[in-house]
Amino acid sequence: MSDEHSEEPFAEEDAEEDAPQIPNLADPTHHRRIRDTGKREAAEAKAFWTEVFASEIGRREAWKTLELTGFFAERYAVASPTGFPDPLATYALTGEQRVGKRMFIEWMRLCQEGVVKMLAEHHPDLRPPPKPPRRRREF
Image 1 (spheres, rainbow, N blue to C red):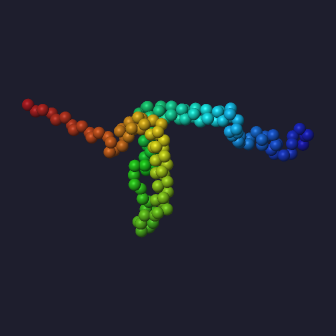
Image 2: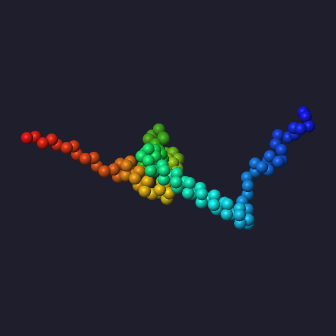
Image 3: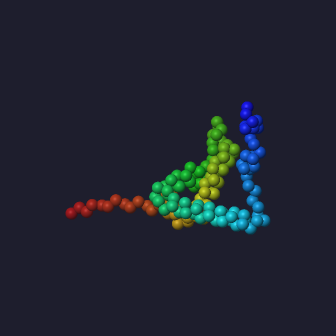
């Protein structure tokens, strides 16, 4: 091999560049940068979810995602041959439901009006009843 290339697969300089930066909260500019980054990311998240819930397609797809977690259902897993509920499988379904709950709470925090509109459009208990068909008048 030539003298230009090191035998080591990773040079020490590369390892130092790839290492995660430890926040230095004693430095006011570094602390301010971290705080500003958090505020910017929160504002971007709010703008993103506001856009999602502003469109009919976004509300529909958010509803589908929430339904996949079983957020509005009581689910028990029947995994045994005798048909008796399996507690471990039920706990797994409960974990999915908790993910849905966390998403729902976060959506309500960021864009409450859009989430309420999504529920009004898609939740079966909140949809308005269908209008009865009009009857023809016979003379």
